[in-house]
Amino acid sequence: MPDSATDFTTLPGYREMQTQRSFAEMFGIENPFFRVHEERAGAETRIGNRTYANFASYDYLGLNGHPEVSAAAKAAIDRYGTSTSASRVVAGERPIHGELERALASLYSAQDCVVMVSGHATNVGVIGQIIGSRDIVLYDDLIHNSVALGAQLSGATRRSFPHNDLDALEALLDAQRHQHGRALIVVEGLYSMDGDWPDLPRLIEIKRRHGAWLMVDDAHGLGVLGARGHGVAEQTGIDPRDVDIWMGTLSKTLAGAGGYVAGPSPLIDFIRTSVGAFVFSVGLSPPVAAAAHAALGILLREPERVTKLHANGGAFLAAAKRHGLDVGTSAGLAITPVIVGESLKAATLSDRLSQRGFNVMPILHPAVPERLARLRFFITSEHTIEQVEEAAQATAEEMASLVGTADALQSMAAQLKT
Ligand code: PMP
Image 1 (cartoon, rainbow, N blue to C red):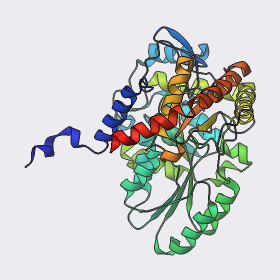
Image 2 (tube, rainbow, N blue to C red):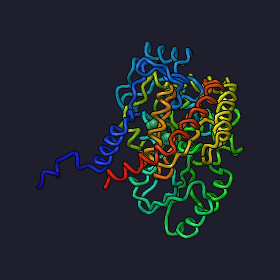
Image 3 (tube, helix red, strand yellow):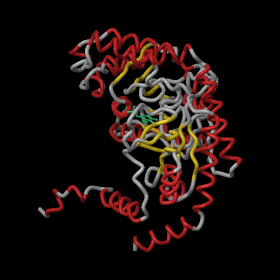
Image 4 (cartoon, protein in one colour):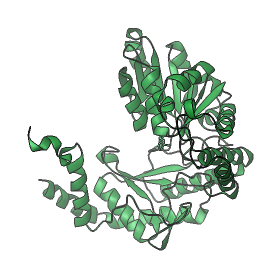
């Protein structure tokens, strides 16, 4: 066998990553990824002994580190320790698992709910197992990687449709639904790259007409969408029971880590007994379950946090538009991209903003198509209106100063590639 068979540097994407790194070094751009945050990262964060206005946190309602959330986690540690030790099937339940699951089920008016240690593994595991090779799975082009991987694992026929284009979804179903046993449609509640949401009433009508299941990953919608932050069901005014499978994560608004599925009892029973990501994986760590449960309680009790988030998100969107920035289809609730159009430009802009005290991540190719490279701003209820307006203004100023420089960088990069 050639040496390359055991050479890790021949793995797909390795060389592209190296090339990106050397470009960044060559152009003096500091690596924006894997930064070490020295304290809790909220509306502000400390990196390398400097305080930044932070636009890279999923803590939409500022619940991470909330005294009640931390106290619940500490009490759970005192009572159960930090681990559930093995799968809940064999190591057994802790009361906090059931408490969290009942609270989440009630949020979706669902019969039952199950939580797992990872949001990503929840999608891969559940989608991978509820459909099979005779079935079809249809999902939005911008769907999260975990859904796409689950679909791949299932062996079902996979079809994606252009972002939020339900006419295209209908056309696919008209042409192909009859060739398959089951059909699963998967969409997100709030799209984490673009900050918009799908037309759920129409999706419900479509899935009924075509005899399909509808699954909604509301990872980013919880705490953000709807006047009370209950998610995309509240935002679009539908009865949550009209969605077959609700998926979400504990890692964003709920200040923990893990995934959940809420829905009809037979589905949740099936997951508890048959899905490898639950059966063969450790039960959620008790302090994490307790933190998420406490965070959910605060979300339900204090809708004013959501009001504040919406005001901040709206102020950022308005300021960005006023400065002529391209914010795509963002509704301006918590996630707003600033589309700049080339990876190098996005990385340079992020670096310049970092020098000015703003922490905002660039999203580069291949995470998005090259022409849609962007900065992605996550707004939280803890930001001030001044912070978000200053960030929009600084971005516009740096964008303006990049015209010319970026073109020069781009042509240098193109020459280096050849
Ligand atoms: N679904 C969506 C829409 C996500 O954005 C993410 C990750 N951010 C996941 C699932 C995976 O969740 P986790 O990071 O909690 O594993």
